[in-house]
Amino acid sequence: MPADTARGTEVRGALRYDPSRDIGPLFADVQGGALFPDSKTFVDMRPRVAPDSIAVAYAATRTRPGFSLAAFVDAHFTPPETPPAAGDERSRDLAAHLRAMWPRLTRPADAPTAVTSLLPLPSPYIVPGGRFREVYYWDSYFTMLGLLESGDTTLVRQVLDNFAHLVRTVGHVPNGNRTYYLSRSQPPFFAAMVGRYATATDTTRALRYLDALEAEHAFWMEGAESLRPGTAHRRVVRDGNGYLFNRYWDDRPEPRPESWREDHALGESLPDTARESFYRHVRAAAESGWDFSSRWMRDTTTLASLETTALIPVDLNSILYHTERTIAALRRVRARPGDLAVAARFDEAAMARAAALRRVAYDSAQGFFFDVRWQSGERVTDRPTLAAAVPVYFGVADAMQARAVATRLARDFLAPGGFVTTKIRSGQQWDAPNGWAPLQWMAIAACRLGGQGGAADEATRRWLALNARTYAATGRMMEKYDVLDLSRAAGGGEYPTQDGFGWTNGVALALLRQQAGASAAARPH
Image (tube, rainbow, N blue to C red; front, side, top):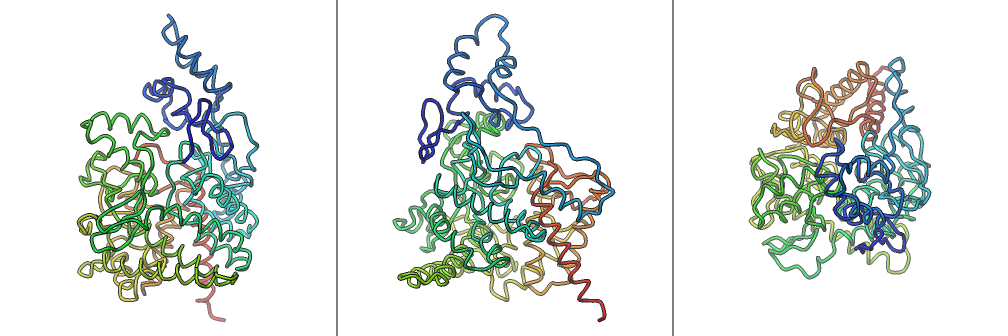
């Protein structure tokens, strides 16, 4: 793990600034005092001088008469980059607008700076937009769908090169390329990205990422060898039946720096004995990408009841199944001495994971996959979610299960604007009434795979119509959409809905191509 230093965070030889560690009491005073409406603003600001010098200056001046915290921060920090405002481009059709957005969302390779929370990347990359000024891990897979549709395999390769660089330098792909994200990852779509790139180019080009894929897999599986049934270590659990699974986790049981005020306020309302567990759960939910959702809550009315690390997530384990299959396939392609034996081990691990997930997480009475409380083996059947589409998308579900899941997706989740994330209105953004582009993509694919092609076509039509309607009204693509009431904007969660927006653009372009292809195939020749 990265080691804290007086001036920054040591990341294998590179000095990086960790705002929650390096400026002393100033950090909590700024974040707790709500100096900025968004807690992320301060952690993205760049110190004008060495952080330890700022800490000393703050200690010396904070109690003086007339001291202004806002003026002190203004004098010692550079504001974060403000995204360029998009012009009114509603005269363009939607696809043309989406392609025109790629240059605006692309950042050049990072030049090393004296002190910053940004982890510099050696190649250009795509940011989501809005408050998200850095690369994000699982966003990048869905953004990549649009880049490939736009024919930009060069930028796709550069994104993959950056992820391989992060694995080499920090040991995994973090949530995003910021020091305050180093203690957690996100849904590990790296292998799925490599697979898309291989399909778009050729498989031999994907071999350059094999070592990074195996290193990332080792990060997720660290400690698995020594687990006994009914125990867990970081991101691995072995349930009471002896089945090996993964869970979401974070290495720091404390408020998230980028959401410090919100986490700290709720944490302080809890008993001392519950606080560390809450911080662990809230950070693990951030690693899941579903931050936040009733999916992770015992009591769907309060985040204080988060139980993220107590759950075996069906999506995470389906993604890692695909990772293991991809590594095995690339080992067989490379075919160096020993590769075939390693490929067999990864295939065996993947098959064991899939069989266990089908046995533990699939509920035959409901025809659906559910997260599981690993200590008791209880399926969380009272809150079905679109995560059930992921075992179908990645091939974990057998044919019967795929048909049942697709049928339920079409019956219970297809809303006027596309697929709704859950059936629960908790006020959290990964719940009803919101729909999200990555889940639309996987749920639409799951419906096709499960024999519900009509529902897949209708979901595509409704989602793209909602995208187009919002674009016509605002000139923007949004992070998420209200798919139940098409007259309302999406909402919920700890920050306002963002526009930009990388993965929405990518999924829309890919769906537009599918829709055009289906229309062309349906026309008489």
